[in-house]
Length: 250
Length: 250
Image 1 (tube, one colour):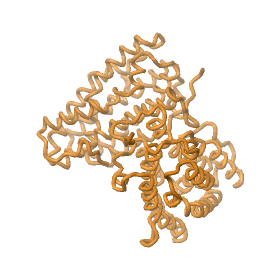
Image 2: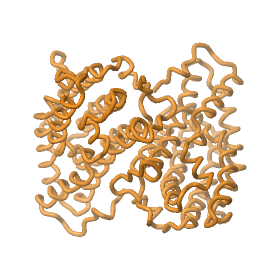
Image 3: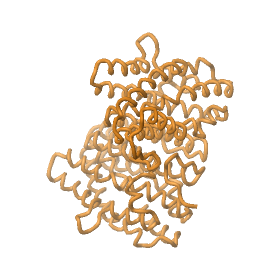
Image 4: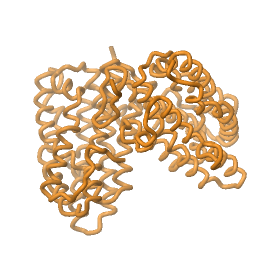
């Protein structure tokens, strides 16, 4: 996988690498996608928001598998502890619910059955393929690429703030409690992405490694973008729901 | 992955299993997709046909990897020889071109550069995710499921005949030579699918195995369908081309 527009010809200084990564976010992060603009702008029907929550659940549910496969490959206790924090954030500690559980609450809050969501029966196939691609990428690529693929979190605090305020304003059937998933993410994501950014700035020491880092982030942006593409096609315009996928109630 | 509509409650006779498989094809095979109807009906622009050829190339190019990973796991020389034929069909014998090479010719015939197509630079991310999902499925699931996932070939001779005649009638810039990819497939696909169908009818001996066979075919139909979904969204309606993907010339 390569993209002509980001082919490096010389080694970047660490801050130049960061700038190149932020430029990828500025052009490819899914806050630019029409589905997100509609979601935040209060322009979606309840069924469309349900489709989003249902499909995004699969992404949430696979994040701990993704992170565990990286923890399994990290070489030092220090690195493993750092990344293990993400497992706790997503799976909880047995007392405080983790991100996966909080997403199920969000899905219930928008009117879906918990068991139906967890079954993933109504998932869009494209959601499954994109999310699984991410899990496989982190499992199969270098540690550097795996860490770099997490860097979309650099851009998530803005989108989360926008999303929560926009959704509370736009949908009178959505409560702050329903959106409680996002509150801890506002502090977790910056902590995670600061570590990951420093890691890639320190460890991408050749042109080839820097190229890999940029392409890992481009790949991950594609994972997020294509999930919204699939939602848009199926549930917004032209409304082509694939066979077997969730059909909102009229 | 499960789908309520196909959950078996009792063991099917082999012919009932075949009927259930054919019913999946009748409701989920991608000949039903609006993109294919437009393709065959001569309703696409040259740029849209190019986008199809470019993206479908990635599918063609990964089929030998998919088949080789199954050959590597088959237990007998007889089975490996049977499945090895597919490798020859797709990669050629060094004299006669295989399916991958013939697809590059098709892509050139519709006006794309061979190197650009082979680089996969302009691929839709969703195409990559769907195709890779198929390769991973065949590598990671049981042999029975891997064989069953090939059964979309049961339905391909009809679509090929329809496609070739429709495209020759609908696009005066497409020649029979350009579509030469499809000619050998008219005999290869039935030979392959007859073997695979007999294999699953003989080897799916429990309700669970029959369920796996049905779900493997549903999965594969999703792989094909979601590729057309991605093409439709990006290049037909509403025309939302993801960042970095092929942009047709105006």
